[in-house]
Amino acid sequence: MTDLRTKRTRAMILNGFNGFNALMQQKQFTKITVNDIAAAAFINRSTFYVHFTDKYELLETVFQGVLDQDAIDTSTLYEHPFRMLAQIKGSSLKNMIQYQAHDTEFVSAFFDFFVERLIDQRTEISELDKCFFIGRVNAIPRWIQRTNQKFNIFTDYDKLDDIFNQGAKHLATN
Image 1 (cartoon, rainbow, N blue to C red):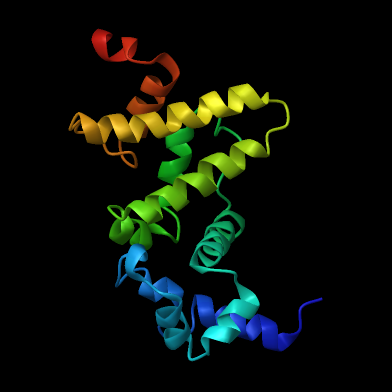
Image 2 (image 1 turned 180 degrees about the vertical axis):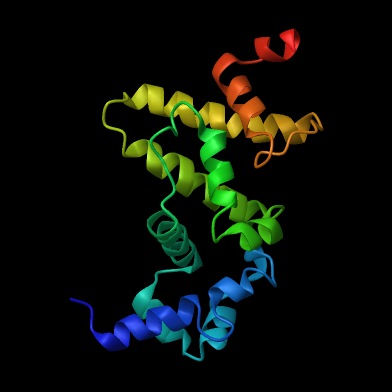
């Protein structure tokens, strides 16, 4: 059982005063250091490392908290991954996502958590199909960026889910 001091310190790191959540709306994730996080939470770096191995583990804790608290439906992830991502954008992460949308480290961590980790929990899907799924989900934002498509992964989720499920053939018919 976690003692009260540990709970309080973790809460300070996440939310206290200008904690991590506030930092994530003021500074790009790539540029946030453990020193920044510790200073915002009024703790020492060494105290931070007692609770988290690095800022990525802290970010995953934030993501897991959103899944738990905002009741994000992950059951249709395999069929409609972009609809689930849009749900997440509408969650308590909304401001953070808007601010961090162009930070490559944040976007990578976001996709790793919400796509790779969640699909790994689906035991009825083979490992090969999981890998294909992850590749297809990651391919769509890359395709949008490389070809200057006007799609937004958080607002055009129905169209992107269609592209995800039907491939490029869908674009030729629409």
